[in-house]
Structure formats: C-alpha cells, structure tokens
Length: 311
Image (tube, rainbow, N blue to C red):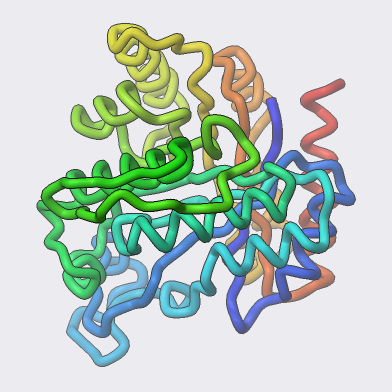
C-alpha cells in the first residue's frame, strides 16, 4: 500500500516548492492538492453550522478560512512537477464540472506531459450550490454535467479529433494537443460517498475511488469497498484494477493543536492492517502546512508510519 500526502496549501501556508520536494525526499508515493474555484459569500456547509458556525449569516459565510484560499490546483501541481522527478501528483479533489472541458483537457494533458506522465485526476461532484450556480448549472444537474465533461475530455485525450453533442457540452470536431503521456489518459478517480448513483459512475467509467475515512469509519469502509468492487464486476470490469485511495487528513489539523494532537490522529497499526487486507492501493494522509518546521516534523512522523508498512 502506497502513502500519499494531501495538503491544504494557500497564500498563508508554506509554498508548493517547499512542500513537494520534502514529500519526494521522504519516499512518499504521491502529492495531492484540492480545489474550489471560488467561495461565494453566504456559503453554508452542513458541518460548519455546529463547531464552525456562527448561527447567523454573515458576509464571511460559515466556512473556515481555508475554503476561501484554494490556489489553482493545476498551476500548483505544475510547480510541484518542476521541482520533483518521481513523486506522482494529483487532485484530491478537483471540480471539473466547473470548467470548460476544451480548456481543462488541454491543461491536464500539458501537465501530464510536463510531469512525465505523473498526474492523477481525483474528481468530485461538488457540494456547494452557490459555487455550481456561479459556474452555470444547478446542484441537481451536477452529475450529468460532470459525466458529459469527463466524457468530452476523454475523447479529446484519446482521439485525433473529437466533437461532442451533449445537453451541457457541445463543440465541433476539433484537434486538441498535446495528448497525455499516460494511455489512454491520466487515471480518473471519483471522490464521493458510495451512494447508488456515485457507485454506478465508479463502476461504469472511473479508474478508481477515493473514500474519505472520517465520513465512513473503518467498519463501514470494509463493507463499502466490497460493495463497490461487486458493482465494478457486475459492470463487466475487473474489480482488482480499480484503484482505491483512502483519504485520512485529520492529522493536518494538528498544526493548530500541537504535536500530541497530530500523533493522536494518525491511523493505528490495526487500521493500516485493515487497509492492507482490503487491498487498498493508497492511503492519503495530511500534514499541517502553516509552519515549515512543524510540516517537516510531521512528514518525518508520517515517513516512520510508512516504514511500518514495509517492515
């Protein structure tokens, strides 16, 4: 099982050119960043109504500040690619429904070329209705919008020329170069809860699934992984080829609470053994990024954890 590092970088944290080489130097398999194209004022997330919520609408909304500060993930990962040579780079999680597929297909193909074929495309449907509306669609349309845009990008990546005539995506027969280094294209991993609709998408056209441990728990994760694999097999695909990346970034919050809090949030040996038994391809862990010294100390602790997987 590989270990990846998922970071919440922003204009108020260490830089990607500090963060990415340190990940590679410690032998981690991959480096990941997330995306929100913007944060509409008035945004409400269900979990912020409690611990983070103010109880009333304010001009700052309910969200923690980091939601307002996501840098562009593709530029960030290009910078990461330029200062590393072996670590894989990916989005955890990107929101391709909010982009033009013509433009995003070229951006991702270019990134895959510049990185030497190291890019992984972790995607989600999104949760913020205001963000979606600003991008030109409603929340109840997000699945179809995402499906069409991913299908259009795959066509642009894999065909000499491609056109598309969908409900939300239309463009005439076109050339789009460069093509990605990876064939047929960079892996597309769906990061979403295992609802019937999401599992259907994973089973039918995704290369992998990204479940988030904090929303599931280990017992439910075992059940859901088995269910997803059964659905992949019923769709006529090999379930063993589905890459499953478990995300557990609770340790990233340790930067605000100290070293003991960080260590307390690391997965136990029992949890790691459960993942190994399940055949999980990758475990993505987080690290605090507001202080360089704390970040490097945290990576060293994660590297020690990684060594237990090969011991």
